[in-house]
Length: 108
Image (cartoon, rainbow, N blue to C red; front, top):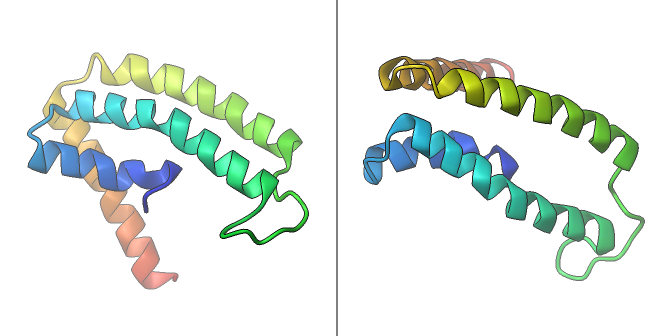
């Protein structure tokens, strides 16, 4: 809820509470992903949570594949959202959030 997937929480809260435009809220969320991701990598790789030691829990080969797809998707998505009216972007976010909510209720 507060990690890299926190965009599902950060974006709507920025729009509703801080009155940020939808496209700016999305950009802010994407910008926050960099330090959040680095922190998560360090914790999973070097020591777990609260000092628990064990083998690193990061598969860098798979992570690079995810990153390549994510970079491409972010490039295309950023180009599209910069040209999209705020109302349509907000509706798209609402549809995705609704679909995730329904999925979580029906298939926990």
